[in-house]
Image (tube, rainbow over all chains, first blue to last red; front, side, top):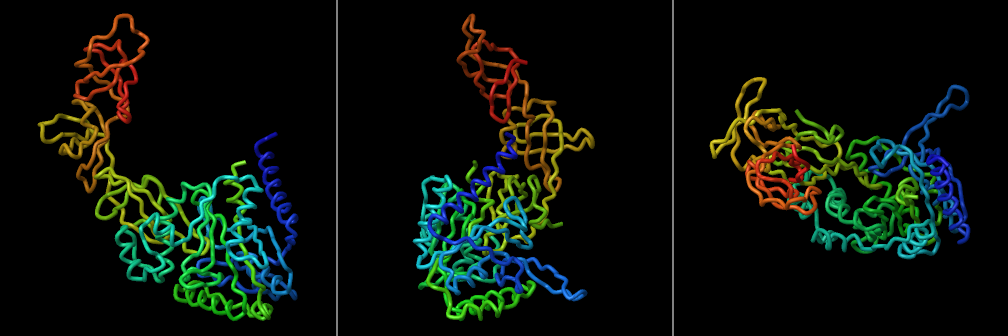
Length: 295
Length: 186
């Protein structure tokens, strides 16, 4: 059989195995719309805008989903229980060896799970898919202590500035979280390249995104395979009010950076109603995962 | 002239902390929730050291005026090593500290690559393969023509290279300058 065809079959096996894994755990497979009425509010993710014709000459703007997150959360708020989805997602301004405007995402939500339970399940999934390498697990703060001798959670804007300067890096960053990120990319990622699988959890609260905050940290995690980011998960915030606050913070940052202004998806906030059940969810980049499995 | 991170590629010469550097590796890193960065490995063309820096995408660096020219090695007066550009007949000289391993391989009239920064020579690279003469080595064992084992031999530049037992004083041998290994008799 040709390599090309063998690869197609390997990919089919991967998605089949993912489905089998979740079906066996009674997690329901869903499909949610990819044409949305509002772009993402994330400061560093740009939605792709598309025009749709209707009523003959009238046209209307839509946005391709950059992640199925909000649409899946709508389902959770309506009592779907555990759900998963495999879909294409779209992001503007992404290119490079391992970035692209379109990629495949697996996203799943587990009701009643906290972050650590979801990390355990993500490990189970990895083993089920054939990656049984040893797993390293460390908090964001441990990683900085161990690999950079930096107390990241207790470093303020000025502290981080002098750390950047010490490493000969540009100090021209607007927010503390951006400095944490450049230091992570510069000092930590090259070190965790040595681990076949590495989970980093409890991010600084400034990088909470949509994860619950607890003191100085947010219950957010990422999975790295040989130093490449493969997954990003949260112990989810639940109420409409919390979502509104987080979205508004991001919108404020987009404005400060003069990026195309996004706007709040009021329908989503309305639909959340009484909010999400306690749950955790994670998004996994399937293309990168497939490559890393090296089948 | 400046280069933005989107123009970065291997071999591009840029100024970093006041020294001319060459890009060895350029990796775009875009955290899912963060801005895009370029994690870049450089070689400092003066010290020869490699260093890593991370830039936010969109940053730019000043270009380094660096040229690599093929020149002829003329002679050394013990303090300076003198070279000539065979096209312009311009002569350049370098101190011992800038010669690096080229010292071990260059004999007069040989061609080599001289790196100029702002028209001043900063380093010399010998050809990958040079032919040198053995000026001292222990006598080889009779009948050992298979080249099993080895022994040290001093060549006419002063460098010591492991050679097969059959190599004798006066032989001309080929050496790979990147590994300092004997590759055969000339």
